Image (cartoon, rainbow, N blue to C red):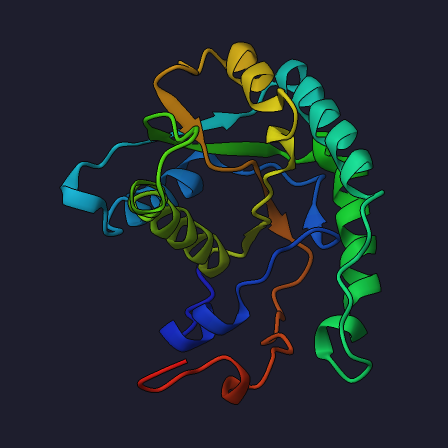
Amino acid sequence: MHLNLSADDVLTTTRSVRKRLDFERPVEREAVEECFEIALQAPTGSNRQGWQFVIIEDDDLKQPIAEIYAANFRQYATMPLPRYEKDDTRRQHQRAVVDSATYLADNFHRAPLMMIPCIEGRLDNVDAMVGASVWGSLLPAVWSFMLALRERALGSAWTTLHMLNDGEKQVADLLGIPFDRYSQGGLLPIAYTKGTDFKPAARQPLSEVLHWGRW
């Protein structure tokens, strides 16, 4: 299934989908692999292509991974929320974001598929240049994957909370990811979406974030 969206539509309406993930509808392997074929065209530093992607479809593995995520989410949820001005769009949507994140934490195990993107190398205590270079070789591919999902009426949400505490190591052990050689970049649910009518999100004005010439 293709929505035949324009490039601009895909770029402006690909959302982090949580409450509108359809947990009851199976996801075909072929559709996911099509998205990965597109993702592999993303730029990567020095053309190293050091990425690896793990798809989890077994309930016996999804459940413990979701439990790790939920435990870390409960810890994260006790932290103070960012403070924004009254008329800031981020403040206006803060409660909805919290509610949807809580919903995902409670239901992550129900996702038809989970995906963990990995990049070659351990990034503990590396300097800023190395970190930016390595993540810059993975994040474009994952975003391309999410854009390709959108075009196929699928959705996802890029989460990282499973890596809190020793969660990354626990998940690596569960899935056989060589922890000493690969860093995980997130945990993404994959599901068809309930409806496809996603819209551009409210964002801060461009004038507040764009700097010409100097900060």
